[in-house]
Length: 180
Image (cartoon, rainbow, N blue to C red; front, side):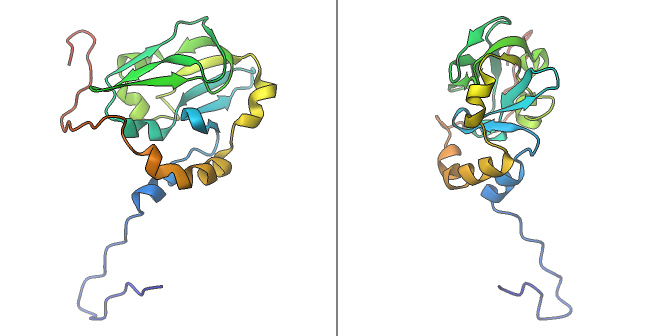
């Protein structure tokens, strides 16, 4: 291990090295949810048997989202079917169901301000409340935080590739009343 202390007592101490980008992303994995890694989705079981579901923090790697278009309340989907779409300026990213379920609610705040998904994916940026239809059978497909980190670590380089390059420096958030 390299000693990072300065050799000259009058020279300033070196800045604490930042974690590499991959380590920072792994450190952002929420410990209190289950992950559907292939779908880049998470679920949080609720005491009433429903699930809160959302996109992982890696979804933000696809670019600055402008729109979130969920499937309507009452829609029944099988695991891996579309729950809706999130769109950047250049591409649409399908939201795949982490489990088979019926949509009970979608996050209207995320529809109005899709940047919530990027800023707080495991909190205010949740996407759906779901009534699972085959949770016992599909529970084995979901990973806890430690298993997800182990699954994700060797795949991060691939996961961080944007589907289509977004070269926008400015904020392209959409105001549904004024456009962008």
